[in-house]
Length: 334
Image (cartoon, rainbow, N blue to C red):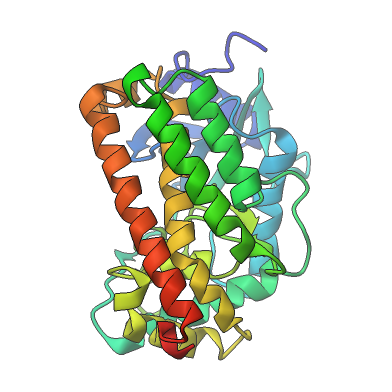
């Protein structure tokens, strides 16, 4: 891989040269860094006055095929008139640029207000949008994306954390035993569940409210194959058992466009556990990044793992309580 295939050398001059070369669009010197946890994202301006966004994908996270999966999902959504931000096609017909092994994409700049879920209609609107996204999502399968399943994605994340030496010796055994027990407990719940392309990171920060236009979904970077309920639970304000009204409102909107399998509501708390593990592995993959270390100096220390294991124990308790309630037909009315 080329020396340029990292963020260390991504200076304003370098990135502007890469964008101009790939797009054929002359740019001004404007390069405004935008918040992004894992990629590098900048606002640019063409000499014609158009504001654009360029996203440089973190090296060694996704391969070309996986990145093309993301773009294909966005284009499928756009074909169905679902409000998303699609990458621009470059002169070579591709949506993905590549310079020395560093992949990037150019997007039109879209702005909007942060989503607020203050009223019943807000949740219904969100549910409707997600239902429409899932209609597009089930049209085809991705070629090279994560499969959100305890014995696949979660097991891989756990292997990374343990074999990579990210867990200090004092807590390694207890972490392995606890997570193995949880995975064994939740895996049977995923039997015969229908998996489709989903957003994968559908929290309110990735939903914009555009005055006069409605809601827009952004940042499909974590798209995956998984149960549709995964795109709903992160919008809840509490654990599933205490969020019945929010779930009902989301599904009221969702089912205006797509049928929902209510039996998959039992997956919400297992998916919350899987999200915790996914996030730990996500952090581990960038632990040597200077920006990450600067923002998370205590990550991976003794106090950190002590707290994480306590949180996992609590989540396991919640999972088991909800599992019993579901079996006794007390959870969401059976």
